[in-house]
Image (cartoon, rainbow, N blue to C red; front, side, top):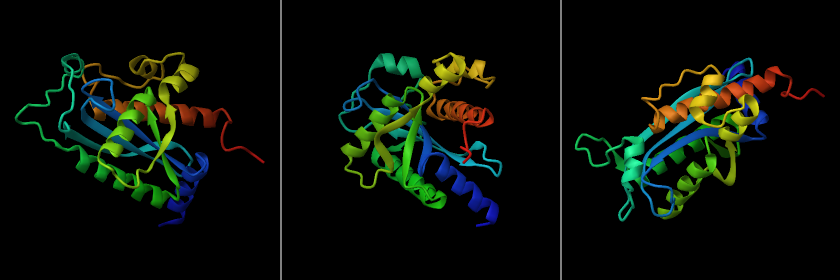
Length: 213
């Protein structure tokens, strides 16, 4: 690792009190995390550049085979446009997808010197509930995410831009947003990540971080 890489990772750990923010979006078959299927998940890994600006590093995305006995509401499928039974849909089991995602997050945490991941989401309580439910359902060990704390970009964008809907917040923040691509876990997670980075970086420019002694 170069000196500049070491500085960048140290800044990320210090910025969020050794927590590593990971932007997560799930597309589901309903609103009940315990009974409804997870159909897609995306996790966006963030990093800090040499100037201390928060940036997108990589995206993990997978379509998911509904767990056995999962409930799927027709209204949810109409809303997302997802067809979980399409013959060409490439999907993996929920257990495999979450195991791989958790390992990726733990590896990046170690690289960045962070002790725990913290979920970032737009209306984060929804995504967080489904992540915790899947982890419990499959008895997955070493879930890297804090069990209840999260960063909610709906709240943050309400403060920063006066908007709480993702598309409208992006519009005010001058982030391109295509309604035709919305409600895909990958697209929504990446737009949420752009919004989160913009808010954090704006706060830094206003003098909010780093705190000077």
